Amino acid sequence: MTPLQIIFLITAVVTLGSALMVVTTRNLVHAALWLIVTLFGVAVYYVLLNAGFLAVAQVVIYIGAIAILVIFAVMMTRRLVGESGPQVNKIWWLAALLAVVLFASMVAVLSTWSGFTTPAPVPVEDPLVMLGQALVDPQGYLLPFELASVLLLAALVGAIMIAWDRKDVGGE
Amino acid sequence: MPFISDPINYIADWLTTVLAGWGLSAALIAVILNLLGVVILASFVLIVDILLVWVERKVVARLQDRLGPNRLGPFGLIQPVADIIKLLIKENITPVGANKLVYNLAPILALATVLLLWAVIPLGPQVLGSDLNVGILYIVSVGAVSTLGIIIAGWSSNNKYALLGAFRSVATMISFEVPMVLVLLIPTILARTMGINSIVESQSIWYIAVAPLAALIFLICIQAELGRAPFDLTEAESEIVAGFHIEYTGMKFGLFYAGELLHALTFGALFACLFLGGWRGWGAESIPLLGVGYLFLKAFIIYFVIMWVKYSMPRIRIDQMLNFAWKILTPLALALLIITAVMSKLLENPDMPASLDGMAVIAYFVMNLVVVAVTVLILRKYARKERKRVAEPRPVAVSPEPPATEIS
Image (cartoon, rainbow over the protein chains, first blue to last red):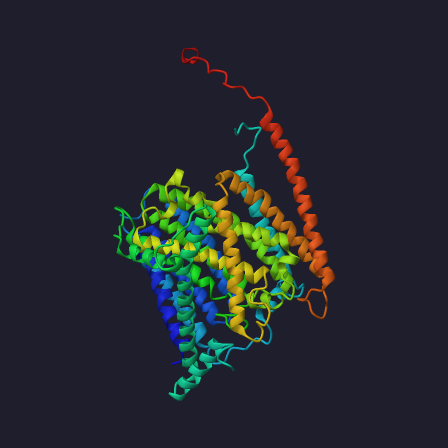
């Protein structure tokens, strides 16, 4: 077993274990912190796959923005909800069945995939440069990239519109 | 490879041959060497941190016309050791109702995130933790995690002052992160890479000459990210006692304190790498150890500037601080980024895009001066308007409400 495989296995155990803790722990802040551990585990996978940019973007967006937002929202709630009461509702068996079926079908599909046995291609040049060029290349992902930018801009304008303190309505 | 000029790589090579002689596989040797490197780098930085306690206390004493620590050892150099012993033997208090796990996790996160930053800072030409090609983004992401350390410290203490301090701190950090990220893109554009070592390597002319305004904005943002005066609302003693670390005692407080000091030096090193040429200096190419010396010299100069500002400026109000971040620094950084991007395309040398000739440097410098002039003009206009508004006579008392009997 190579050291890389050992790192992979440790990360897998940590990621899955913390993901399990997210849904089973009763304290909401603890759940948010476990979620951060899970997201970190995913970032480690990106590093193992030689996708450094994706790994860092994962940490910036999911931990730096989303997890902090979640923690803020939990802290703002007056009392920690979920300290009492059942953790599952009546149709938990349906969810479990769906999860098992999905997992089984994914295993079935992936078992015939040839990617496991063929070695990963080594990038000839800096993958970051290739990604940057693909994002602004008309043959590549220029249109989706610009559309996503416009969508984010619209979200930004919308947020400002909601928070705008209109003087004429008598906001003062 | 001579031992004197480059001991770190020399020892690494020697260890590789010794371990290979024991019959270990190459992959295992790489793992062992990497682990050793992490331990050595982290320990080295933490030992420098002990020295920083002395530096900080001595410099603040000199700025306030005092002597500072001078009893233990020559120039009081053993004072930090006494400080550490004192912190270690203090009682560790966990407040009632505190969330124990999170409460103990927060100081570790606060110090660990600072140590993580050193992974990408090149100490010398060949002496660096990791030559990440997304170094700049890595720094931003680690900064995001350090925000997390503060917020959970404030929340888990079960203290309203701590929570208020944490909220203020997060508001500051998130606001000033925006202009900081924008300004970090300027060296990236100039060097055509996000790797910090590559940015250092392409600085045949220090970027502080090419982008002085960006350097200034970065320095201001550093000050705010560190929560140091004039942006130390997060621990305003007169309002919220000590901010997010109010409940921490002993070495747990010590970790926050050490983290804060080291963070300042780390940002100094980062500033040196981005704008002052990092390890570059006379003879650093051939003798890597000299490069390490140059980097720390530059980092300590910036560290001194940070302290200098901290101990000479009064605290500003939180609304002033947020206005400053969002209404001045962010638009300025955005304008600067756009102009720099356009100029760097116009002045590009197609053969070597990352290199700058003399004419380009002068052009960038003049552009910075023009941006400064425009900013000052706009701010003067605003200040004039604001002065007029404040000078207007206002009624001393508001007209009284009608008596309650009239309403009913």
